Image 1 (cartoon, rainbow, N blue to C red):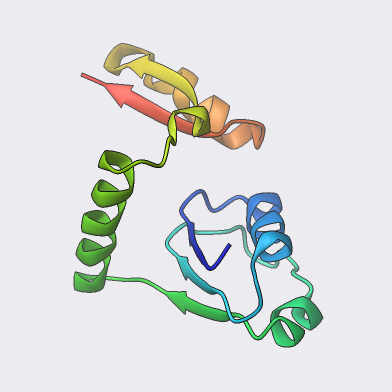
Image 2 (image 1 turned 180 degrees about the vertical axis):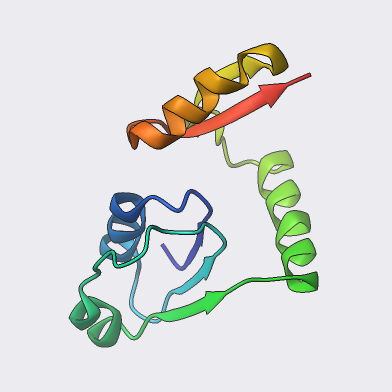
Length: 108
């Protein structure tokens, strides 16, 4: 991939993203990863990857880009593993903490 948006904060997902990026790829990091997780910096260096943390106002721009992706030809529905109602919020948090979920969407 040329562009990656890491929003889960899951260390294995971030490492997988690094593995699948093309040389010179750009990764926007929005998810908060656990403290002390490791990545292979040799892959980042030799693939010439650009890593950028996103915070504050700049985050709004990423929302517009995500809307364009979702409304465009790219089918991202396979990334959603759980859809829950507001009353089942704990189920959603448990799924996210397990590290085995994709995106968890809360409908209300």
